[in-house]
Image (tube, rainbow over all chains, first blue to last red; front, side, top):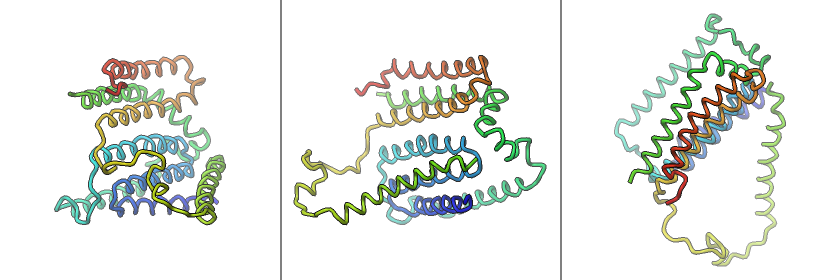
Length: 167
Length: 118
């Protein structure tokens, strides 16, 4: 059952991701990105990480994507007609994809090593509940970063007012 | 426990199925007698002018970014609300500081007229 749902979400994510890359109209690409984000949320639930799934829907599908769509609206880019705007776009993209592939393989290889596993194994997280695990860490050990997040958000609020209200 | 989320998956399937069925059934059974008024983008509305593909005012960006910032704030509330009883008074003070700092930003936006559409 789980494996069927995994392949369902994985297939939707891959197809939508191909749409993000392949579609010429940036609005369609952004909508495909929303589908990718939501199917990732389904995959996170399958990994017993519902908090990450909630954050994925709220932050990525809800907030980040809104920002993408607004930037498309504000800049109103023309529909891509073929060749990229930058001459060295293709080698650059290849470089980025290569770096991502190396990172993916390294992370997967490190995760197999027993020494790389901390005390919070998937079994422990499944038993305690992942919201509880995240919350307990966030509101005790990582209290200072948590409070500093509010400062970061404050800076962003002031920044957007200064930018948007400038006459 | 992924099994606990099966009802949500079932709801997603039902929603997609209902939407698809509604579109297919109305496309098959609905009568089609088009005339220029019916084919206009806003029937009984004002005729559109210009292209929809134009640049939108930067003011909308302000709305979008403010939404994102307070959206991120809400994500931090979720584990806090789940753990509220365990954290006790300490957790309440932690979150009070967090909210107080963001409230400064809220008051700043308010005083600068960020919520006004002038």
